[in-house]
Picture 1: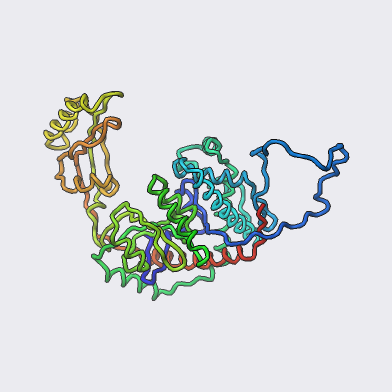
Picture 2 (picture 1 turned 180 degrees about the vertical axis):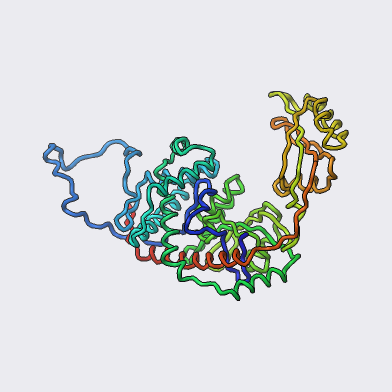
Length: 466
């Protein structure tokens, strides 16, 4: 369980150098931040790179090009220390971002995303270059294994997943390049930074004492997107942050935007800060979180160094058993409607369904009641209350064993009711262990140094934009 400590330091879920976490990342995660390198003059071309004289083909030197360029041509968009990023590279990576956000992006938003993707690719290139400079090599087998795990998350074979990526306008090569960047960077951090990071036993014990002292107080499961800014870029950063909020409120994925654009250490885990208390957050974020409901997303919040966008994923009390962690055994009873049926035509059947469900007097009678109205029954064991839609959670918590919920649903999806057949109440939460807190504190310190490391790579890079 991620922990945030009282000094406001953000700690992300453990993501060690073996990159086990990649298997759960969907389109995989990037360690990203905005590039602040200015465009530099184009480098001179070596004599042996100049094309053969056109006079051999009798082509005039004074000519006019007609028509538009072929978009399939891989022309350079940027050259980073000699490594080329082409427009095709940008478009294929952009396709992953758009796919993760439902495929609906305005032309203006697409152009903004394209610029951000280019910055991300520059960071990725710098990370791979630095890993190679330190004699770190990511093998083809390692990349293929991770690609197969990602494909499995989409319930596809690697071959089918590669075809899916092509359908979305991306490619297997683009995904594998992203995987290579992640693996190379984590391995580099494991060699250059992790061995030199120390966490004292007394520091961990102090955190444990603070958690125990806070028992019973409210805490929040927070996700965050952080965008850095300077006085010169403040207005543009705020505008970008507001666009992200608008996209997410319009149906975009908070996790996807966090992975692609957040500059916090939690970007790799979709912005997940884990469970935190208000006093563990910066003052500005705490004030916003305490006034938000579950599932809400904030407007951009000014914080030192930039802007944050937070989402309140959930709420609970510190080290206290939460009823919504109870495990349920349920029977789902459902009826469906033929296509084209109107609300008025379906009303008598819905009314009959509701009446019959009121006659359920225990889980042993469910099948009999369901068969009398042509309903289907599906058993669902080991369902947590908090995994149900919010509208059903309070309803379920107020049921006795053998009782049914009120009907819910729609003509398109069918009308359903849940019958509570069993409930295992949660034990009092024990909080994170010493080892968990130690690992999380160590990981945060590694990430802080990693951000400085990447900042230095950007500062020293030679980037030629084309």
